[in-house]
Length: 142
Image (tube, rainbow, N blue to C red; front, side, top):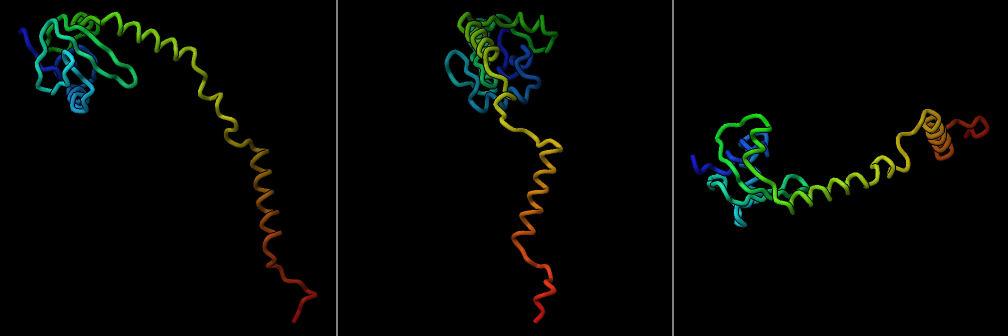
């Protein structure tokens, strides 16, 4: 076997969990083979360059082997070799995530505490009573 469909190869190389997920990503033009946008039926061979976008990360790999079967991860990693530029971009993205701020710190105020809740309920009740005068005033009998 010297050629294989790109969707099947991406599945066998463990870039995607299912072959249909690989085909969906190919259909969204997120996979390129040798610089050209690929279709799911495009065949890859050893020596081709495959660039794909996984979330916010772009990866560029060289095809080093062809396999139609999905095997364990160490075997799947032998099917491709990542380019040095792609490895550098991954390391930079990893460092950026590490240095990034904690998302929870950007929240200024979260759920109200029990005391806050009681204050809110009390304020609503007081506001309701002052806005509407639906009480019967015994002095005002007409």
